[in-house]
Length: 367
Length: 176
Image 1 (cartoon, one colour):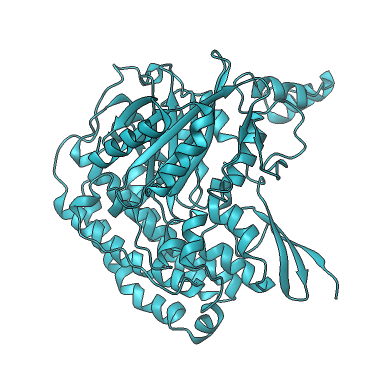
Image 2 (tube, rainbow over the protein chains, first blue to last red):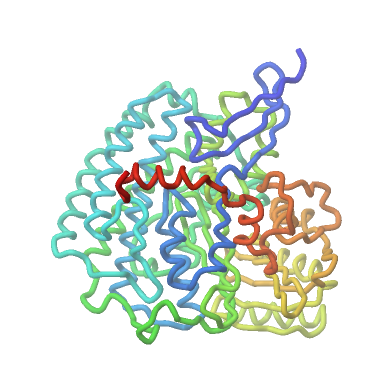
């Protein structure tokens, strides 16, 4: 049988956003794979150079669709680092709540995502419905469901509403009560186990050489998590564990996502207890935020997103606009190099499983 | 700056001569090195635990007529990062690849080639990665103006006057 060229994507149920892979297949086996990004290129890096520092706050959440808050945090932390701005303590704790809620929402969303390639359509219904409860919190807290524009340089935009703490606690209790259901539906499901165990393997050495971060790396037994290695915000003041697995297959990655939800719930509960009263932002722009100038300097800031290391490299030449901003998408290594190197040899139906469990996210690769 | 970083900097200076060091914060240092020493310094840093290539990017300094290539190396052991920067000429920009040190650099270099026009010797795959049928100068260069480009590429359509009148009447802005 000869080699056949098969187009995977740009639209596929197992894919976040539009991303295409050209597969060369013989029978069912992939012989060669070529990633083809670019369907979601919107030129953010160029757009940011043409807008003022504060106008960009409204632009950046759009870079990564499933988890927009990490962009706001990275951008704000980079400006604070260059301009040496002190952020009030309360604002940092609020940022942690937002980040961890976003992490839970994104993991629930990825339970929905795995339903596509597996044909397990209860996952999408449950995952999306439970994620909506977290979006309700975001709506109360920030006024928007997906793109919040809540975290700004110097702190957060406004004070938390008075009853939001109860709402967060109730939602966390609810999600915690739902976790056994997810375990039964996905992790202990015999079909899922047979389908995912030993599939889309990645060993430790390859993961480290490739520069894979996040769950893809932790599934190979390496406990590297930026929240522990290089604590930003107040992650060094809360207790949490970094779940790891040693199998390095698709099943262990899904399992880690499930375990991380528990840790995020634990973090948010501690934050709600420890959060002090006080101001929520620093005014540093002398009244006119749009004319604010960041002093000359360079900074690279990265945070642990659900898919791995997500970073912003910001260069300022002292003007009212950023001179250059580069976004390091968390799935850049596994989404481009990983596809080319590790898909050959797998079967066609395992391709979406690699893409989904490694968290290949098209909007952050294209930018 | 952390002690381990200081020691490493001293060692690098012994091996490769003096270079400019800029401390950004306790765990982040930017070093400006000459372009022929970059690969040596990167190899040394990689062998000392800074084995994770976080980012490879480029900055266009149009007034100085130079490109600045940026390599960000991260150490998972102590959470420190080195920003290694080097300056290359803006006219016919060329540099060597670091694909043999970090295979993923191949895609970063491909992207820089596409958006800045920098050639990387030794990288065999320099096909466009993200843009399709691009017909202008590399777009992240500072002398590229996206507004001008889109005006040229997608010129405003000329409408008949009657069509505009009709549209105004249809929208209710004007009585017909």
